[in-house]
Length: 78
Image (tube, rainbow, N blue to C red):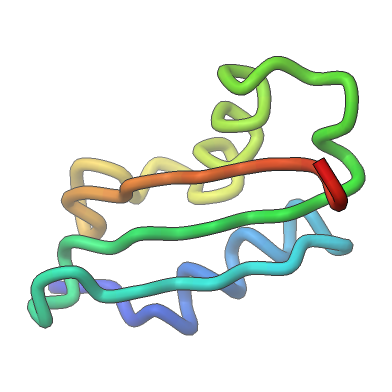
């Protein structure tokens, strides 16, 4: 069963409360999304660490209900 973009945003914000999250459905199928996540919590972290924080927020949905997520992360104003 595909994931809704609002569900993805909610999962991310529940783990990273200050995040600004933008989700785009890339294929219109509810399985392939692009997400941009901006959070002060990312400041000083490597890109890999930032992505790990987002994937942790998705609680194992990657590869299951969420097939693909193109991810961009950053701290504000960087």
